[in-house]
Image (cartoon, rainbow, N blue to C red; front, side, top):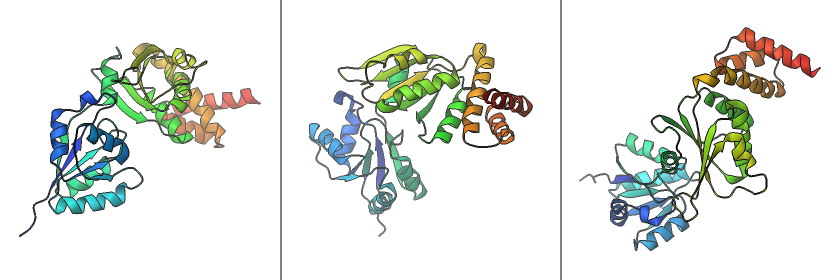
Amino acid sequence: MATENGTLYICGTPIGNLEDLSPRVQRVLGEVHLVAAEDTRHSGRLLQHFNIKKPLISYHEHNEAARTVELLERLHAGESVALISDAGMPGISDPGQYLVSAALAANIRVVPVPGPSAAITALVASGLPAERYVFEGFLPRQKGERTARIAALAAEERTIIIYEAPHRLVRTLTELAKVLGNRRAVLARELTKMHEEFISGDLTQLADGYTDKAPRGEYVVIIEGQTKNDEHKLDHAQMEQLLKTTLAEGVSVSEAARLVANQLGLSRRIVYQAALDYCKDRQ
């Protein structure tokens, strides 16, 4: 007889405070055959705290292709698997989407078991509008991709949520201020922990706040969306910043104007003239 497929559970784990591990997640972790974890050492301590004794297998960005094949085989053999990340919901700026997509394509049942999310936790306590928002996760590290992503966000009217590492925080805040304008923003760190902190201000103020001290810990950056009052100003600021960056990469004035006009939805003629003026000023 054919073996019935097992179930893949996507389980949310605490982002800091262990009391946030729900009773349902505890039950599921105790019932599955195997727990796939981003960091087995970190997750081992979590399971030990709740006296859950289950086999652990690593599942992270460097082995997800090979591990997915292995986990699908075990799921097809009838075993149930729980996927967890170091903190929060798997698949949200953490490994998980690859396995979920593969499991669904293989007709394996996928069950989400909700848990904490740093993005939502920070948003609801930020004081910025939470009715409509866009989650960007970590910005790209490559200069060209990063510039294009930030430029695209400048016209975003919804509240923007970004994750950032401490060593890139000041650079990111400064770049955002140049392109988006000096908008209201909130930094959230150490969420649900003893030293939880929310810092409000505009983007420049927040960057300047780390002049004499280094950022510590992972940050959630909540940024006010574009308003009608600053739309024209932002278009002009974006255009200038993007032209400078694009021309610095060695492309022609005509090509730079085409790329920037397409990104911002502006008239190519206006952008071309701005590019000419910029090059003329530099001579």
